Image (cartoon, rainbow, N blue to C red):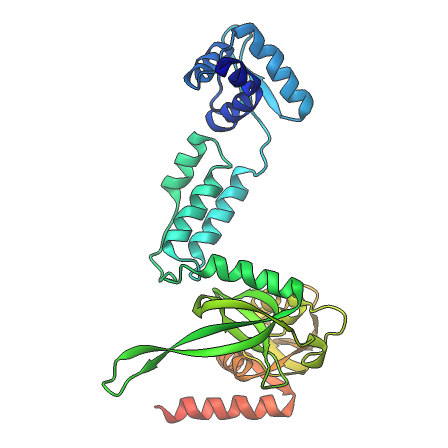
Length: 332
């Protein structure tokens, strides 16, 4: 009876073998596939393998025969993810410092499972880890999942938010503060994952790092609609909102005009997108016109370019840049 039940799973085991054991540079002959099936106590004969492979191909598996009829073998061609895509995903997880080291290892292992065993070994040996600090909050998966649910259901969430402070002994310590907020979106920016939300005590948006959120709970209270605290009406456009932010500082969105040196064109287009409105100012400069949130984050962003960016508008941003430049000068 057990053998009969196993034989019914033969096609699934065969598909799994092809996924794990084969790729463009590694293939298995029918006799080798039989041996692999036998390792899992799946009875099989060489001739039956040909029929099984045809059934899998008919279902949609891209199974290719390589080499001669007598000396060749089979391998799985097209996969859910190409090798380059797997590498990109793996590198992104490694670089994300809001994911703990434990979760990073688990995620990378899952991502590599989309490749063959041989490809996974090569990928793993070539992974570059720069030893950047990693988040230690193991609740982050649970937090993200629960926030997704709360945003979908339109309810408030409560949690403790941790911040670091300097004690009287001039040592660093953590303190926790309780929050109840209306959640609207999750945004990945500047190597951190943020919750965009509204603190029920104020009429604006705030941003909180998800790796600093602990003991999250959904409440039964309906969330405040984002139209009451933002310019969005029918849906909260997180992609649009993210393009207007600078270093996740909140502030008032306004028309912005910047006179930029031609040599930082690539940087400007990377930051604002290919479709941002620019026009010639003179032979060495172009004028950028866009909308953005005027904040301390934008001020710091402008100042880092020194004389390569001059603010033309608005006046309050001009004032803040001058003030920041004077603060820097007074330090020397």
